[in-house]
Amino acid sequence: MRKKYYNMVEEMKGKIRVFCRIRPVNRSEAAQGGVVVVDKLDDHSVMVDTPRGPREFQFDKVFSAESSQEDLFQDTNRLIQLVIDGYNVCIFAYGQTGSGKTFTMVGDKDQKNPGIMPRAFNAIFDVMQENSSRFTFKVSAYMLELYNDRLQDLLISQAGEAHAQTQPHSPARRVEIKRNRKGVVFAQGAETKEASSAQELFALFQQACNSRHISATKMNVESSRSHLIIGIMVQSKNLTNGSVSTGKLSLVDLAGSERAAKTGAKDHQLKEANSINKSLSALGDVISALSAELPHVPYRNSKLTQVMQDSLGGNAKTLMIVNVSPSECNLDETLTSLIYATRVKAITNNAQRNVESKEIAQLKEVIMRLKSGQTVEEVDV
Ligand code: ADP
Ligand code: MG
Image: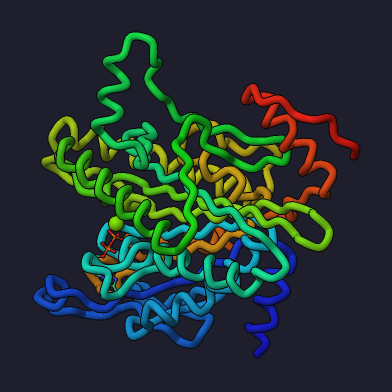
């Protein structure tokens, strides 16, 4: 009870919430003897057996190997309501390769056990449905892959992109990370598509996963070597007073966090490993600076930290899920991940609603129409 209320207070103060998920022992670990050294003690604590004795870590919630995708999502669902209310929310998974990040965020391959992303798509439209008598909504999304510190737009077909680049007058599209006056990150130049149902959003997601797969085979890499970044914007218009709020849900499946490049890596593999390490170590530096409350936070050192700038120390409600293997053979990486996650817990964000009065929303709409060359009647505000 004490831990529970303590966690609630921490959340109210704007602390980033951190969940820990222990995955089941896998086949290759079982073949090596399957010695388990990570154990859930209670809903908020995890115990790790180290050669120097047991070590306990505390998190907002701990999920054991028996926890289902539904169990995990139950605690996530609440965040969806915040997006609809006009907050920025970020959910990301962190951990070494094979620890269960993609399983947690995306789900298994045939989607028999969907993860947070597809569940969130449904939840967004469910919440909108419940509120449909008082609000109208507009949902749009961008989906990006960050690979070797390059942002790839997953909603543009490869063929379309190749075509655009052969056209003399169409400049190659570049996605750039920018922030608006309120500090909210947006992907300038990224294809942003509207979705009017959970199915449509899921179809966009599948399209993105497919183009991720294409570029992955072309470059001969697995998806675990790139970061998947999804942004879903929800605009809600209050039918009673005309105010408009815009919330954003960022969903991030990070590449594996393991330290050094494995021996025997070829040139391009080394480059990849270095760039993954570079972006994740930049993330680590940002987290250190924030948790130590240093005046300068080095967001600009990598694209990843720029993309996540509003989610870490910024204007967002953020949930990190640290995924760990239960087995002795991964003990070092598990400890590193848990220590890292403990530092993230100390970061405070300052989430505020993005809401505009009816008047401002109207004026902005007029400006947009004028920009696109339409004629507009003068409005009284
Ligand atoms: P990562 O994305 O961290 O590299 P994956 O999510 O791809 O790891 O997980 C590695 C393997 O373990 C996959 O085959 C995945 O289906 C399986 N797995 C991970 N977590 C779980 C879990 N909680 N329950 C069942 N299988 C899991
Ligand atoms: Mg993965």
